[in-house]
Length: 313
Image: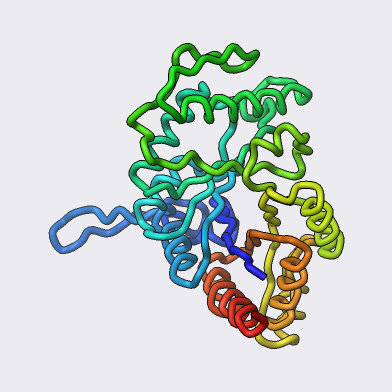
């Protein structure tokens, strides 16, 4: 019943806007000066780093950095977190239309070199006009496929040539830049409905649906049968407390999705066990007030899950 745990790091969560440089009324927080008159550089990135460190210390295997309209830029967040953590993997949301394929690949090569191969890519193919991406919806899967083919091709000595509709490469290849470095594992979104060809190029499929938890388990089981080599991840909002009364109070206050894991610590662990039995490989957990919740998830849920799995082995 092996199961990895990742934290979905929201960078624009309203509950977190009181931290870092945000203060009441939305006014930037003005740092004081220390004893030697240097301005203290405390801001929202320090808060995100605190969440990432807490995830690492409490047993998470990785962190997913989404691309939120009002949030921080995922590549910048990734670089900051990789420098401040030692073990966890960071999955960066990557927009295929945001840059040339070779440039995105070179960014990944640099990240892998300085982080010890800890970056993964979550492909966000549905950017749309609001993000400056005018590519028609029906062409996005083709562009994603070309990008993944390009990444595989240039992650070698070369020369690599590609003449695609969206990406063109002549005599490409990173050679020694990526020698003994791992190509970023590729995550695709289930909601993007990737076809069989794209799934063959991917390493992980992220189920990002608001369906009831039972339906998510059915989707996982079906995918496991049809794609046995593909790792299956699911985004699962979390509400876990020690007592049922506390769960009920918090549940009434929160607007939770249908796919949320809700219950006492032992109840949540049991639900995770059922999902693992259905074929889930990676649980991507999320919650508001991230500092508090990442500690609860790591110390009370992940710890219990691993202890339960060890007893069952």
